[in-house]
Length: 281
Length: 287
Image: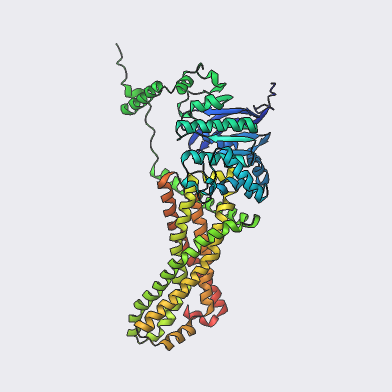
């Protein structure tokens, strides 16, 4: 597929593009010089250690945060420049599964899933009813669960309700923030299957932030690995790997291979050196 | 001659000096100014959303119920005791001067103009303000506020506007309730327990307290309601992560609301006195 490079570093094929993005919270830099394009119907997994800015990147894509420098474009438009109805219209093209599902405590499961449809009057109430029940069924939740409150659900059920809520508005892009964190291996696999099913049946573009290599192997078309800024050598790119999941094991950078294999040796040596340096002071 | 190598510490860069007290003070001043600006911006956005889009009844009713109906008993009990305590405390002094029958005027003017509105607002800052800050703070740290935005709904429109309207519209009604219970409490203790003549008690009350005094208290309570809602919601929205962050937001909501209530009481009191003097120039000496 030919990709036409644009002046700012993305390509015309990209549905989502981050162009030289820096993100800083007060004195703390999280992302620096991130340039990344995501094509339509592609599923990209973003991996990396905790605190390296993966979730921040998701929030930048949907406009919950604005970059300190650089820009984030969705479908050719700068997200930071959108306001009012345009921003709402853009967000309705996204579904977001939050790390802890972020279900609204005060609402029932039914009202949670129906929230987007009702709030934006996307369809009539009887249609809302049918869509909610269909989405709950699609994510494998039993009948009757729609009357429960989020506090009565297990972790896996909450995640699936969160997924049903995200899918209810029929999004073009799904953003998943650590979809399998805190779940048992079976439920993790159920969630992975649901991501895969969503990707195939609805032809959505997906961005999955995860630590779980099983999720990566199962759902990713492409993997991007970020590294914490504090531990990068001067002048190094924060993106250590950008390629197919099959290439992770044989990546040139040893830090990528260590992360994929879960080998803490080098990290432990680094921590010991840091402790030594602090002790010497 | 061989030169002895420098000790390792000589190669190490000197540790960066910590911030001086002046730097720290400067940072605190900047933070305080930024915080005030942030509250002002938050308040402005709330007013914009009140006008821009009407809140739904299905969202408003539960919040009005939680803030208004559930606070009735607290305000009623507080009001009753304020009246009763005032009667007990003031009776001795007044009786010594032979002015026990004047008790009604002092108790009731204090209740309707000052104590009723301020204490009702203080109770509500504790009950409603802290609870709003804790609820919104929990929503912030569990990403529910982000989820609202991600679903294309403005969190200020959905979460702050209904709470603001409930506080502004219902706190004056609760104040009226507190005033009424305070007047009854004071009258029961004065006339039934302290044996003040009932006719004289009410006559002096009528001579001294007029509807403008009641209105002055209610007028202030609109501002107290707005202050409680905006400060508590702002603290909740800016809550830090974890149980400690949410707890801190709830505490700050009460403390800052209380300070704002007292500040507004002072400013509005000054303003109201000017209005009162303009309406009743002959009463200047009494204020």
